[in-house]
Image 1 (cartoon, helix red, strand yellow):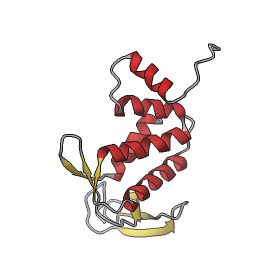
Image 2 (tube, one colour):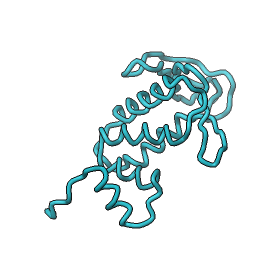
Image 3 (tube, one colour):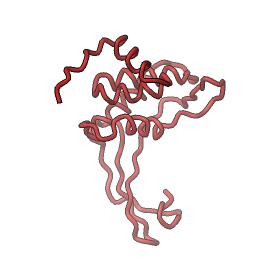
Length: 156
């Protein structure tokens, strides 16, 4: 494994253990060249997934991009990092279990929406505002009404 600090090609594994949910192996590594320490994760990948974008382009599925999208939606929300990791793992498993190698981006978005709705309604609406391309405040009001959200109580 290449050192992310100095680029040295030969790093050493100092510790290996399963992740909390057992879906990955966490490895602590050390670089003999610069003495840098870093962590890597090893995960099972059942198949190479390709995302079919709305414009017809095909891009490789990136787990990191999924994590970033959830992170943006969940920013400053009371959701723990392990909950986010579990959501990511669940969404990836759902995508892999579809049995398809090419998956429409809308399917990924729908899985994300479903996961967020069950964890944090504010993050759900944040994500929906981008995913559904809201342009005006009326778009929010319509979405919230369609989703069955209660009217605000007016209490501060």
